[in-house]
Length: 491
Image (tube, rainbow, N blue to C red; front, side):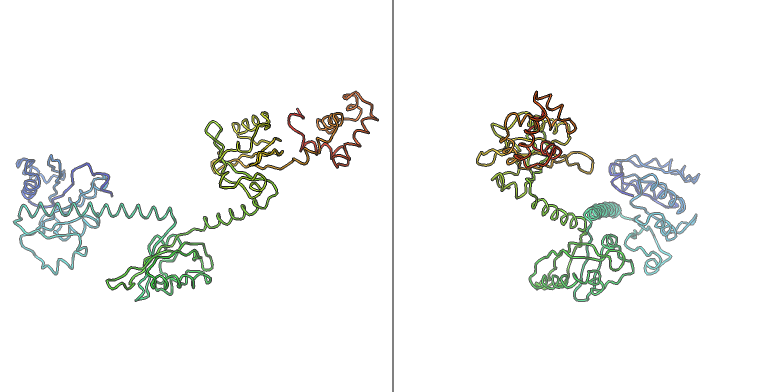
């Protein structure tokens, strides 16, 4: 039941009395310009109708029941309708059904939050007897007959305001609980003088603490791992001395004994007028996933930083959107290019390109970005001093949990030495290398015929090529060519 569901409707009030004239009196007091016709009230009384008699009003809707049993049914129906009563006036003496006290008991069984005003001219019970029989003393008031108009108006306004404040507190509590569940955090209060800890329901639920678990400070400390409990106690003691809050990453029990998770424990002491710590308010947040992820990232970064090749990670923005932008470079990048990490982050790969960077390579990269497919190409890059060097570039898309490309992993292998070695070949030898690179299974006779030379001359060329490139046969030559031949030369 939430007030927010019927905020735009009149506040609903129920009068339960065996005298319909009392209902008319309440209508006159609370809605003086909308009093129902007396003849209708008398007609309803004569036939004991269970239908609601309502006023046509803007602020209140006042319904009427002749008996306690009828009133309970109306309260139940109002709840099902989603527009419950806020205040109910109940007559003490109703000979035609339940008494006022019996009616109130049954009303609270139906709606524990219902606010009751018990109306009485004289009572069959003393105040002590009423208090003893009505256990929910915070939700009922007594109104003596004949009642004063202003007293009734003020009472209704006060009870309605109270209901709205209570509902607001409940909604805020629910929002806080939802936020705590999302953040995986619970809270507790430590009374250091009595060595007692009051835990929130969220804390117990989050860490699966049994409902019958002890509430002493000693019991609470046992929830920390043996390696963490000393640190926690030192933080509590230290905070009481320096009057400052603290944060501690440690381990806390979750579920069965011996099962610990990583948490962030934090909190501060409340001080009295003499600046003496009296109560500690703390939070415990489950950061296991974040902690494990950070460890994995540290391990991954350690591996990448030790790689022999340049590693660059970019976002997935297209060139038309000013991308892709660099978000990470390893240490080898700084050593090979001369650009610092601070300079490179946020820039595009264009900082590595220059006059002799091949257009076909850039076009191939752009096609890969558009199609979101891996790219491999050899191209000329430039360092911070505008000196050329050759790289074998491998670009691979990185997908997120929704299988959308979020980043690109770029591996740059420096192949300048190999390219220099290829430059040492003669034009005829380079033609032989290109022929071998085109097909690993092509015969020597086919190659010789294609180059218009004899097989003997071809063998002599191959011997020279093997020696210059440091390979031991056609298979190694083919592998060498597949890695280091320029895209334009292979085409």
